[in-house]
Amino acid sequence: MVTYSGQIQFETQGEPDIIDITTKVKEEVKASKIRSGIVTVFCTGSTGAITTIEYEPGLLKDLPNAMERFAPHDAVYEHHLRWQDGNGHSHVRASIIGPSLTIPIIDRQMPLGTWQQIVFLELDVRPRNRHIIIQAIGD
Amino acid sequence: MVTYSGQIQFETQGEPDIIDITTKVKEEVKASKIRSGIVTVFCTGSTGAITTIEYEPGLLKDLPNAMERFAPHDAVYEHHLRWQDGNGHSHVRASIIGPSLTIPIIDRQMPLGTWQQIVFLELDVRPRNRHIIIQAIGD
Amino acid sequence: MVTYSGQIQFETQGEPDIIDITTKVKEEVKASKIRSGIVTVFCTGSTGAITTIEYEPGLLKDLPNAMERFAPHDAVYEHHLRWQDGNGHSHVRASIIGPSLTIPIIDRQMPLGTWQQIVFLELDVRPRNRHIIIQAIGD
Image 1 (cartoon, helix red, strand yellow):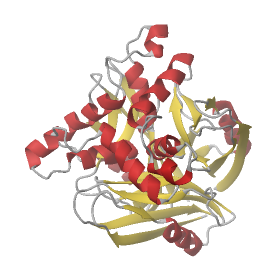
Image 2 (cartoon, one colour; image 1 turned 30 degrees about the horizontal axis):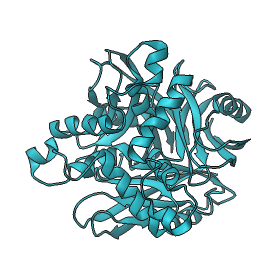
Image 3 (tube, chains in turn brown, green, blue; image 1 turned 90 degrees about the vertical axis):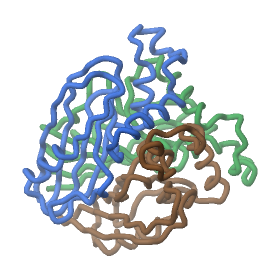
Image 4 (tube, chains in turn blue, purple, green; image 1 turned 120 degrees about the vertical axis):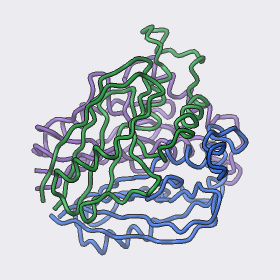
């Protein structure tokens, strides 16, 4: 049983960037040499989130549209009233979707669906330099 | 320290099916013979989700009603405009709730509440054959 | 490779209590003596949730306001019609946000952002005695 730590780093353009990190996570799982275990994909920071989605252009618009329904840009945010940074909706979306995703590793592979990609959601209003932690445990 | 991989398979009737998989997950945890560790329940595919809920008939209606508020059936989905498969709302709901749940194993048991069941949410519009991965690690 | 089980216990005042448990989770990670691994923070019960947020007074209002948009207090809940406990919205919010969070442990630390705290969301309508499970695995 071993643990493996990797990291993915990239620049975003701010919302509504949705970055497909599946290939990078697969590379880390391969580098870990783990045959059977789990991998946790974790986003450091409070204005980004990790989930899975069918990575195609339509849904890259539909998902932000849905988030707009519970955390609209034009609502009044107490966070903004205090800090004037215009990203109250970003924080709220990040907390609801969550910063972490754990995926099994079986026969050195993640059992993702054909149309299921691992994505980082940039929810902040400005370009950011992001570090995603890839932590694997197994045999 | 060992890893254990199991799978739960079932047919759904399409949305709004919510399947209680608690007993099946408990059987897999028992089969793993792990006394102390964690178990990850993972849904392969981009139109289903895993969470916990009090499994009683009222909430099985209330949860879909809430999802309707952020991903309504009658909204315009770019996914649908491209692919004509009528399940844009399904994908969006799946991404927001998420495909993975990790639960501790303590004394060979999951510390679930009495009214807390592990569920698979079928969010797709048609019957599906689903495979849920149960991956446990521990001593 | 070892596993470690800890628990955090506290009283809440009912919604919209949001409890910063970061320091407590850090203490458990330290107590585990794990240098490299993962830690799962799990909420027993179906009316609470675990996530991360920038813990500042503005967002502690903004997050409940956002949840109100998909699970408003004044909607009709089948759960309430059956059980008369007035917490249908609590259950729905808990299922959507989720009861579990898994975080890497690297060099004995969790790679949280400066403005990213681990929080328990009390979503129930009355004061509750809560037990949060901290389960760590690693070397």
